[in-house]
Image (cartoon, rainbow over all chains, first blue to last red; front, side, top):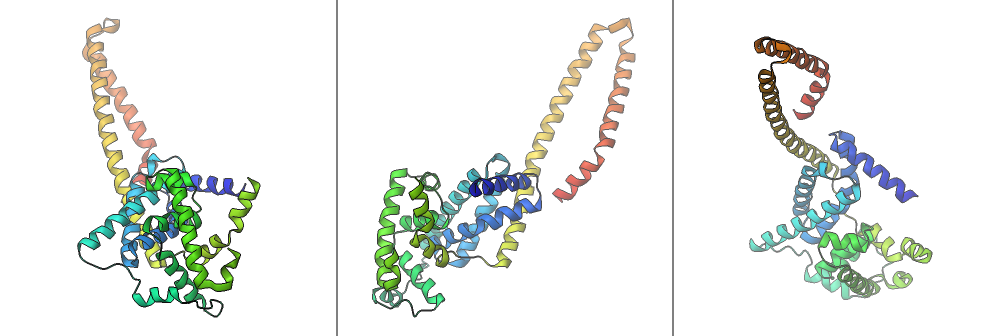
Length: 194
Length: 115
């Protein structure tokens, strides 16, 4: 019921944006920018590049806004643009010879340590979980981000990444297993709930 | 199905990731994004609108020309075609002026939107 209401709201504001109304744009940006930004950060591993990617993606998506009649289709299209723009950005950075991976050896070393998580402050907790996520392959990381943070279904993820549903499911299972493994070392007793 | 839905909602990995992994862009960036997106939409919309408007005008001129040619050829009521064309032109002028007058408010809104 609640889900249906959200979809209705999204479609309502999508139509407002098509008519050029500011509140339509405000709603769509507020609703989709977080996941778009997170997705871009997870691929580019650089906040400045991620901001550029998100801005480019939104501008491209809004240029085709009038062709969409459903917000679900629009968001899938938007995340697809974010994904491909981020990949292009990353490969162009690689060609420029700029190292993007923020994981230093010392940070990876921290992953191996069986640190007690309970004593760590929130910022560290966030950093450790991000590190665990960074140990996954890029596609697994993207699938995990879209599924757990964006609450996207397998078919939506398949559409965004242009791969089959079974490939998405496989990456999801594999990514989850790897993540659990990494987090077990990091989070100690807390992860037992998983 | 019910269990599956429940599992999804209470999945500890999902909660953990949602609390710690989501990156939030700055308010300044969100503002910039809003302005850039609206500007991009307006430019693409106005270009599309201009193209459609031009095409519509061309089609209208062709149709009216054919209608006038038919009218002159058929000589309705046996009246001089020059007079028929004159009356038709007057009616067209009144219609166009009426449309222009009635849509002035709408055009003002569009002008604000595209500038």
